Image (cartoon, rainbow, N blue to C red; front, side, top):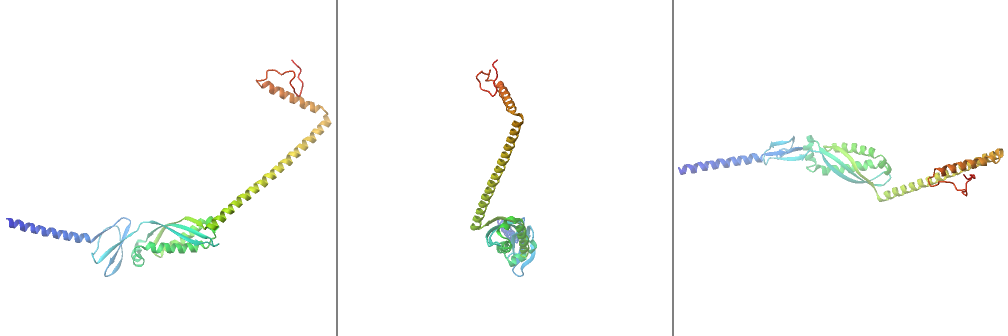
Length: 276
């Protein structure tokens, strides 16, 4: 009985070992492709297969085949470039690029560029395109026509990237500055323009004050002429009429003032008012 049990356990151990070996072999022949990723298969005998494997769990032949995983999602990349403008000004530009590989061209990308394809392609073609585009504009146009410059860079860079199997979903200029000398020249120009505007304002103000003085003098002269004519025609009657009107106005204002209860006899007014 003991011998039979020993034989049974031995067989079970052998079966378990066999199952473990088979499970290990099967496990080693499986690989996972995560969401947003793709895989290409390298075969020791035939090279890189022209097949792109999608998401999920897949089989491959251990030792003979090897899966290479690629991130196929859209990713950002900032690329700084220093170049020169049409008027020989130093320009520092930074592009933010959203890129992804064409899934169907991943075997070709791996064969010709390798797994680090973006490091080999994006900096070089971005520098090439920016130098070509920026050289067509002077420093002022790069600022005032930024949208046109960005569109030109977008079109040319997307065309160059497509030659390497890359798709550029978005390209934007995030940083644009010039050399220290140009920046100082712009600041001095702005100060000069502000001083010129201030001088122009002072000149305009002086002209307006001059016109105001002329108009006021003309008005005073006209008024004096009219008064002289009135005096000639009415004599001292016009002066007396103005005194009466002024006295009435003063008396009215004093009567409305709560602090004045009566008018003393010795109060000086333009028109003598008899005591009550």
